[in-house]
Length: 125
Image 1 (spheres, rainbow, N blue to C red):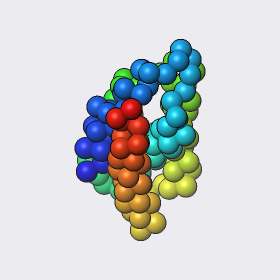
Image 2: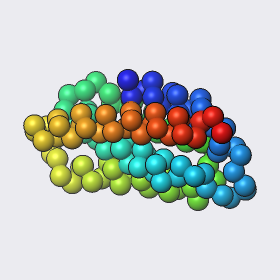
Image 3: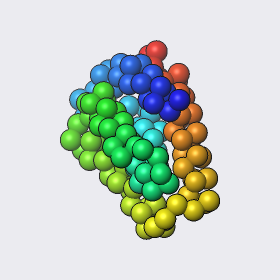
């Protein structure tokens, strides 16, 4: 479900990014940074809890970067948000706990919703 929402974002969300002025940021930048952070958290926590997704969330992030084609500065910010999500959970969880499972599920839901919302709000512009 989340991957499908990211695909929708990739297909629909690319148009507004291309319409930006050189060096400008799209109106959905805050949401995109949050999505990158969620992808980073999922990249750490899903495999920790047994999901066979060793590179899935990093690959999703790579696809988002490819679709967005951000400037170097924006690319750095997006990667920084991904790394923040990853490192935040790496510091807290060393093994899969009920709390980690719950966080994983909540991030899957939040990421899917955020992807759909970005695509719906900005994809047709």
